[in-house]
Image (cartoon, rainbow, N blue to C red; front, side):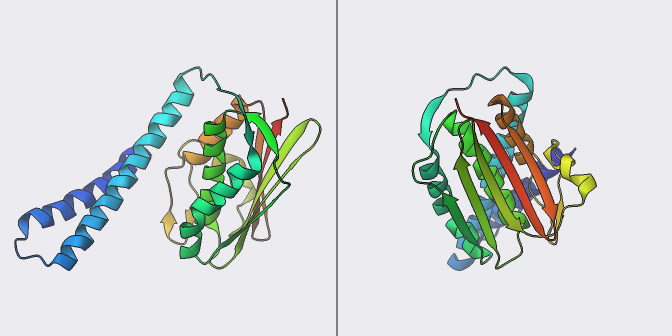
Length: 215
């Protein structure tokens, strides 16, 4: 039900704007550019939704074989923050990374990167405008710990564990956001790596903690 609604909304908008472009013969170049831009944005949103659905279906229905390699976790996080800069700027957010140089980790790099992408995206969505997001990472003898901090509305305790359920979504001041699949996917990936992901929220501060074994 949730997925059908999420797919229908951008699809209807895309069809509407493309119909305007087809039917309106005297449309100005400025409006044409605007409608094309909106249509492309909605089509890209559709692609993201479909990819998320296919990925969660794959994790639910298949035996996933992880492709382990040694990665530089610090460089991965630096690249992630760099790629998110335009999104951060739109809400006046800053992102501070605290990590030792060249933390090495054996993992499935593509899937672990997906986890961090989901966590940072989630932090951006639920942060108050103009606040700071922090990412901290450190390695001990047996494990690697990462924490994602953001300042936003406190999540009630009874809803904390539910946010890892498929299709479960918290409301923002702008309404429901996302598909409710990102954190479910993140937990599945971390579990496959024999790690844990937890969340705490108090006094407008939410902290996601990821712990991974050092192989």
